[in-house]
Image 1 (tube, rainbow, N blue to C red):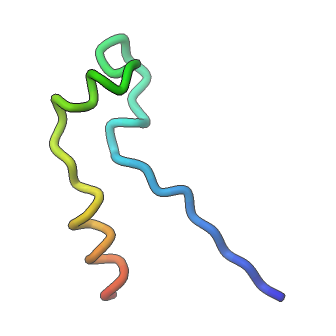
Image 2: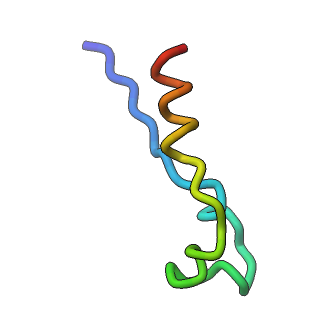
Length: 43
C-alpha cells in the first residue's frame, strides 16, 4: 500500500512574527487556499 498525505495550510500560518501569532490576527490577510487548491486539483 502506498499512501501520500499533505498538510495544507494558509500561507500566513507559516509566518512566525508577533503580528500573526493568534488566529484573530489571521483575518487581516487575504485567503488564498481555496483558489490555489482548485488549481492544484485540476492540474
